[in-house]
Image (cartoon, rainbow, N blue to C red; front, top):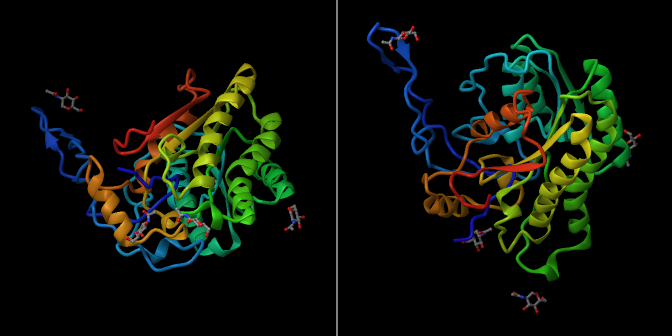
Length: 323
Ligand SMILES: *[C@@H]1O[C@H](CO)[C@@H](O)[C@H](O)[C@H]1NC(C)=O
Ligand SMILES: *[C@@H]1O[C@H](CO)[C@@H](O)[C@H](O)[C@H]1NC(C)=O
Ligand SMILES: *[C@@H]1O[C@H](CO)[C@@H](O)[C@H](O)[C@H]1NC(C)=O
Ligand SMILES: *[C@@H]1O[C@H](CO)[C@@H](O)[C@H](O)[C@H]1NC(C)=O
């Protein structure tokens, strides 16, 4: 089976949070229930009819980026994080998780995504940490550099960079994949990551962490993803090379490779509810991911205690064996 997996993808419904009941041990103290990965979220996938880039609020039932479900424990207290694509999907889940772990958060997004960014602001500020929103297009090289400098100035430092924003439109025939689209996919997914790291590395102290959102498609591509899959493979390679380059200065660089994940990313690259339903039926857990399920690995890799994790790629793909 060809899995249409991508860095920030699709739509699923939340069936209800994990049971809050738990069970009691002998002294009567509540312990958390096991979380069954098959049933934590519903397997129903309904993609909203929306154009690019889409909005979180258009999903019904709603996506879960951890708004109600993520429980933090101050693991990133005092950290200062810049997250691109932090308004929705996986980036939003990372922004919420980082805030609940005690980090100050700056997000970047496209101006059209302001309503989503406003929601993230409310969610982050509720945690008592500082929030900054810097809209702008990552295809612009000088914007990428200025984004890093503005985030650094606003937060009074920068020690976590999550280059997460991505672009993808499916094309089944190379004859119709235009040079314009090829460039755009590489500009957003690869060049921006390069520009961001080039600007950020001199500002980041030892102990800092850089994360790229790659995709299961880096190793297990779909035929309609000629440009996109190449960019996601490039990000794994860049996590390795930059990890080797920056390791000696105490900066760890890694990539996360998600499988098919419910988000606006799915609708903007042309997937339908039928596509998502078919893919879902082929997966070991019988469902695709909610963005909230990606957040824990971004937290773990950003933590100083992950001090041996660098120059690597980590798959979070529901058992689709791409990484
Ligand atoms: C029950 O849970 C409490 C709190 O986690 C713990 O202190 C206690 O040792 C546990 N008792 C048993 C029998 O596991
Ligand atoms: C690119 O970004 C720079 C810095 O933010 C800005 O001054 C410039 O107007 C942008 N260029 C375009 C074409 O948007
Ligand atoms: C791709 O497009 C070209 C030009 O339109 C066409 O000749 C070719 O048959 C198409 N290939 C496939 C696999 O559809
Ligand atoms: C989505 O479904 C349509 C209709 O069944 C199909 O033609 C198309 O190839 C599917 N797209 C992907 C990316 O699988």
